[in-house]
Image (cartoon, rainbow, N blue to C red; front, top):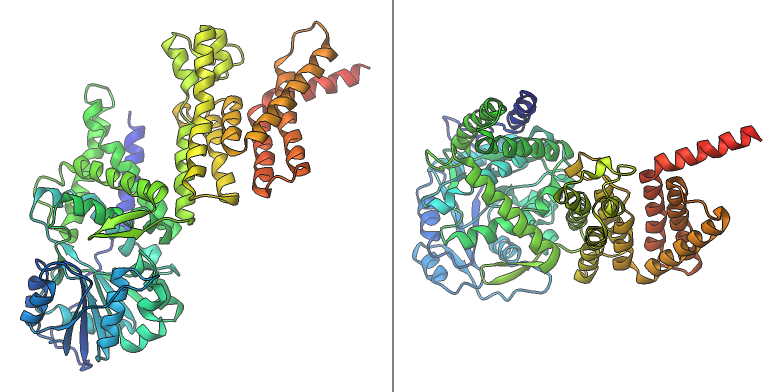
Length: 570
């Protein structure tokens, strides 16, 4: 019972490793840095947000030298609002090919700015009176570029669903493992840099087509030798992210939710994953209240709840009750990840403020997502579950393989054929969809195509002890190369015929069948080379053969031992 608690305690503790209360330092005396400060605000349809930001800029004790609002093709009153507050307005700039709208707006704001220091602020940011002074002082101390993760001010219920996504985002910027990360990012809502450092890093022109411009820009600063420092904004810098409705919230979080993980240091990713898995396990407590493990689960839920209350004090205003009902926010986060994955894998763009922003491509993140999706498909043990439906545990039938052949033996023809069809389909369908999407090719597609076979062989639904994956292998080959699948079928038929001729009336042994399956795949590899198949498919055939050898290792070992014993007796 307490094993789960023993897992959830260190998982929860991972959050304390990741979180650092790295607020912006404040000095009692004013900053001695008298450099001229330009504020650049990219704005697209921000008539509701701009008054809050521009009013807070007016109230700054450290007054900016100039405020530049770049109207990024707004269809509302963004321009008139900017003029009303006395800001310099830049507008009417057509978006060139290869640029994202925000990067083009920010770059043009920089070109218009004349200050020695430049603050890039999103229109939804709100500043306390001492914010700019504290940021200038922090930049002077670090002698580099600084950014701030703003405190999330929320008003409506749907806005508070962002609790868990905001916490996970905060971990990415406070993790101690990010200090030495060469891809260390900035938080784009609030960045302060000197003009000289910005030009050394080639500014937003160097990341003009990047969706995750802030994360990539941080890496550019680091490459240029400029220190990158991130703070959390509680008490000084806040924002209200998505006042326009839950749809804008989903689209806003979804446009970079999946791809941003590829920029983080591996220890950060692992600890975030550990914390999140522990959180989801703890949130299963209501479903086990009637069982003996309920006390351990309840203790885990309480630990996470207390921790989330503490973290949320520094993250945003999410109400008094939502941190206690955090499963609601976790469900929202999981939906965001599914939405983002769908957009990356199948669509290739996300809608945002009336534009279609390209996401995905043949990136490492896309490959990982496809691989995970295909592994999950392969891990669905249809034959085993059909056996349970027929009141037969396939682990106790024949050689214990939870595959379609044992299902046939246990439950008959109808069940067996259904199992074969489903095991074939879970290899064929996802591979065919992946290739048809056009978002994976070459070795990346070949590696991902191996995932259904791996999923069947090491299914987490059977604690990693899956089946031999013969039907799934055929399905994958039909999706990857129909000629290859047909050739493998012919090779196996030929080996079967030769085997029958050699043994006469004797029944085929499991060891002989295993040898034929593995040898057949290795002969397919030779065939692929002889037929000049694309190199990734030939490599896939070899990897598939090695994997089949592993799943049939017991039979192959017994066959080798038997042959060795026969030689000794001669």
